[in-house]
Length: 448
Image (cartoon, rainbow, N blue to C red; front, side, top):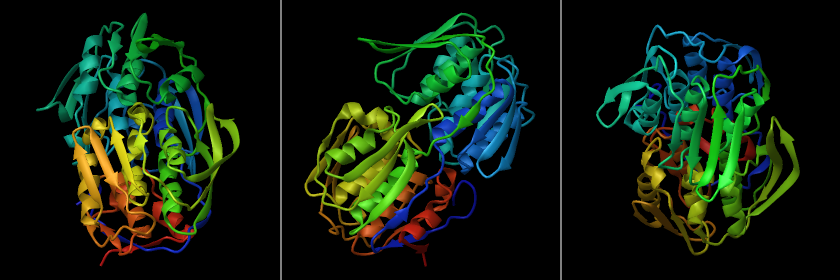
């Protein structure tokens, strides 16, 4: 059973060449932040290109619960009338964030320094994920959190009535933790400082500056030091959301492994904190051409021309992990069709995503005939060459959208069909995945 309804098994069969134009949805990380920052600004923020997946729709509903006026005006076009920093009202009901770790952690941050109480929950997958990594630093501001054992949802957060600024070094490379602390710092006096040893996606810093906050980023031997001056008046903005590089990864990787493919993917974000997968694919010999580089909505973007070709296994630099942490599942599929072995180290964070993604990918790949090795922090895939994966299995998705999409891509290039036990979680991040891939030539159908 999915978190939002009945399970929807799906099967992918060996497909002919994928061809055409793949217009992927707006970036999920930026879509969440546009709604949240718009709700914290005074006045109307207009958003275009918003991802209308379930995760983002849950965040829109949460912002309404905190008092912002959030309206859909056309496909991808939304208006947010914000209430200002510190202007949130106490929600009348439990905030259900569905499947979204980004949504719940950022929303906890932005209410943690306002004198109010809010209770958060989510679907079965989200209720397994650790929240202590966010509530621990929020407690330094004066907030209190009461949840299930292990710091899990449902959880009630009591905001600080008299918040104090915080200096915090993140113990894990997590943009969600960094962003939650910065959002809490907005309603605290003085300067809140976040120190991260490894750079993570910087959408929050970019967007905060765009909305008028004073944010300074300094690179030091200890890592990035991000300083935010509290209690600004955020100015409403026009936000153009670029296309999501994490979603684009699926048609891109499908084209790389389905023989004869040649596709065009326009306007994909090339933010340096998000492009690790694309650097890795090029290292593997992928035929990807980055055309027309430009800036849209404050983010670097480019058009991608992607063609099928031989790939080689590599050792992925572990320092690249923060810039591609969500893409390791689909990378492991590409690795299965490469010649040689692909070694992915420094990926411990995958074990606390929507599922234990190392275990989910390892078990599913093994069931499809691919030899895999793993430990707590490593995934190793022994490639079988183009068209060499036997397939013929059903993979468990564990309510994880990226696991579901990854195994469907595997089935498009393997000898025998590959099924997933539930494709419904795909709607949380990539609601047009099936029609988009079908238009390119993929063979996808409901499982029998």
